[in-house]
Amino acid sequence: MIRIESVTKRYPDGTVAVDRLSLEIPDGSVTVLVGPSGCGKTTTLRMINRMVELSEGRILLDGADITRQPVNTLRRSMGYVIQNAGLFQHRTIVDNIATVPRMLGWDRGRARTRAMDLMERVGLDAGLAKRYPYQLSGGQQQRVGVARALAADPPVLLMDEPFSAVDPIVRKTLQAELLRIQEELGKTIVFVTHDIDEAIRLGDMVAVMRTGGKLAQFAPPDELLSAPADEFVEDFLGAGRGVRRLSFFTSAGLELTTDPVVAVDASAAQIAERATDDVPYLLVTDADGRPLGWARAKDAVGGEGLDAAQLLSHGRPFEFGRDSLRDALDCAVLSPTGWAVAVDGDGRVVGVASQETIAGAIRDAHAERKGSADRKAAAGAPGGPGATGARRTAR
Ligand SMILES: Nc1ncnc2c1ncn2[C@@H]1O[C@H](COP(=O)(O)OP(=O)(O)OP(=O)(O)O)[C@@H](O)[C@H]1O
Image (cartoon, rainbow, N blue to C red; front, top):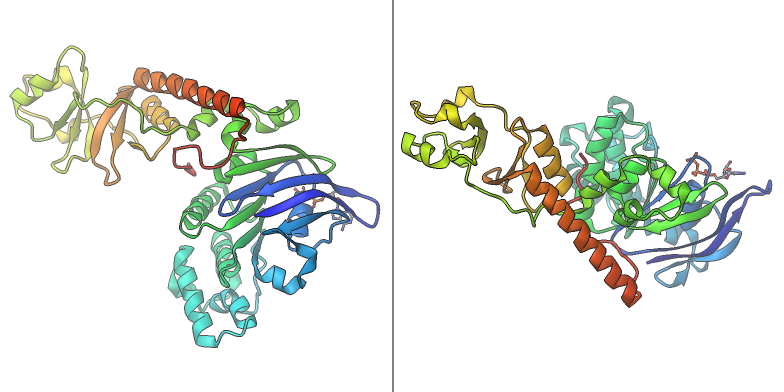
């Protein structure tokens, strides 16, 4: 655990960049520092690896004061990723990634093998290994930056606006990749951004800082959205808090029905059996149970069977139990029938849910969450990461 204890940074010109900041950064999770420009995020991050020396207070890494160990030893335990990747322009990609292992005395072959493994892990084609940074896109360069920071397998990763310089689509992909890598590696990540959506998507815990280097709120994103500490945090979070919070509710409790689901080769009798008064649309699946689209029940009954070419689009299904209630709601709202299609991990239909069913599940989830928050408050327990149930999606 990284423990920041009442830390202040006063630069030589008198600027107080960070003012008595205290934070406990849990192991194996992503803690995001977010706030407006100049609020002291970068200064805080750099005090952790001592690129900036603090003025007052102390920082403990696993209980030991970071000033008590040689700065090189400290930095080796912390990968560092910055905006625009900061790659060595005269070195190939594979050599960039192998930099730290080589510095640690690994032989060339072992360092290169490690670098090639990491390229695969961060989603880079092995064919890029011999290129130079200028021959890569911005998104690819950021991936190299992440791979280089992971090369010596440090327990801590410090990331300073690593995805700010790439376009929004690449940025979402990189965020999703980071979450995937984090799921596998379980590093302690401290991530700086000025983008609140990025903070909410990536953070297990989010520290909102305000100008003057003061902490405004430190909470899991769900709690931030449901109970902002004050007007500053509320303004910073922006509009649509309620809908955004649904990302933290799992779809696992949704009551699905399979009543409208029929296979494309269903007989006239099977279709007639499905198409009751309560089922205006039928969800048609292929022989493997994957969704093909919606058919109007009244058109399907009495016909010659279902015509896959005549179906209404089923939109993007949600993965039952993995995706959130926000994903399910999005599906239902965008669906031409108002029904969301739920699939399993292999893309096979497990059922459908109406907008009304989803609205009911949202009410239940809120009531359940409120009950559990009240119980926690009564027991004096703080909120913590990992209580969300839904996969954090980078949609
Ligand atoms: N070397 C320095 N000397 C004097 N003041 C500095 C120095 N570095 C940063 N500052 C000041 O400290 C404050 C915090 O800067 P910092 O870079 O930590 O903020 P930030 O939240 O990361 O900002 P941004 O989002 O714009 O990168 C700012 O007022 C900045 O001008």
